Length: 389
Image (tube, rainbow, N blue to C red):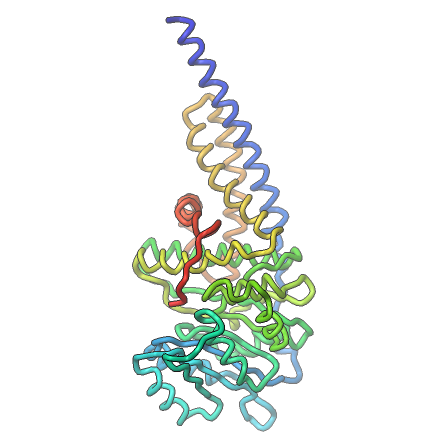
C-alpha cells in the first residue's frame, strides 16, 4: 500500500504544480491585458462641445415597438435639447419608427407631434415586406427619411442625462470623426441583479472604450451612438449586417470603425439612462440577444476578448483549487496584486461614470463575471438570438 500512497501524493503534487504554472500564466496575461488596454481609461478625452462654434443639423432616430409609456416619459427630454441656431430654432429632428406597435404608441406620438414641430414618425405596417431582420429594418426606414447627414441613435426607454446630451455626443463629428460611441447607463435600483447589471455595463464600457483607444474599435451601445449617414449606408451593404435581427450597434462599429474615425465620449452630459431588467429571466433573454453579435466581430477583437474571458475564468478556478495546496501563500500574493490592479481600474471607471456605490461590490462582481461567461458561452460562440423584442 505504501507505493500506492506515494504515487497518489506525487500525482497530487504534479497536479498542484501544473495548476500553479497555469495560474501564474493566467495572472500574467490578466495583468498585461489590464496594463495595455484598461490603463487607457486615463486617456479618454474630454468632449469639446462648448468649444464648437457652429452646430450642424442632426437627425435623432428611435426605433419603437410597443413603447407608448416610455415615449410619453422620455421623448420630451429628447425634444428639449439645447441645440439650436442663432435664431433659437432647433437644429435637429427626432424620427420615431413605430414598428408595428399594437399599444398606444401611435396616439402618444400624435399628441407629441402637436407640441413639437421637429418630431416625425414612420409607421411600419404589420404586412410590410421586410428586406432586413428585426430592428435593422426599422432603422433603415428611419435613416431613409432622415433629413440630415449626422445621425444620433437611441432607444425609446432611454432618457438623456440633460439638455446638452445631443451637443456633447455630436461634438466629435464636428471635429471630423464619423462614429461616436457614448455611455448608456442603468438607473440604480435595489438588489444584486441591478448591481451586477450596472457593473457589467461599466465593465463593457471599459472594454470597448479602451479597445477603441488602442485602435481596435469593436462595439458600442445602440442606446447612445452617433454616426454620419454615409457610414450607416455603407454598413448596410455588408453581408454581415443582416445576419441578426439586432446587433446594429456592434456591427456598425465592427464593420466601419477604425482608429481614425471612431471617438469615445464619457462626459456626464452625454450619458443616457434606462431601467434595467428586474427579473433574472428577462435579463438572461436580453443578454442572449446582445451576446449573439460577438461572433461577428473582427478576428483580432474576437481573439483578444475570448482569451481575456477564458483567462479570467481559469484564473479564479485555479485560485480556488490552489487554496487547498501548499502553494497557498504565493497564490494569495499573486491574486492580491491582480485584484488591486483590476479593482483600481474599475474604481477609476466607476468614478468617471458616476457609479461610486458599486465599488464595494467588486469582489462579488468579479467572481460573478466568471459564472456569467460560463452561462452565456453558447451565445458568445455559436448560437444566435433570433428576436429583436
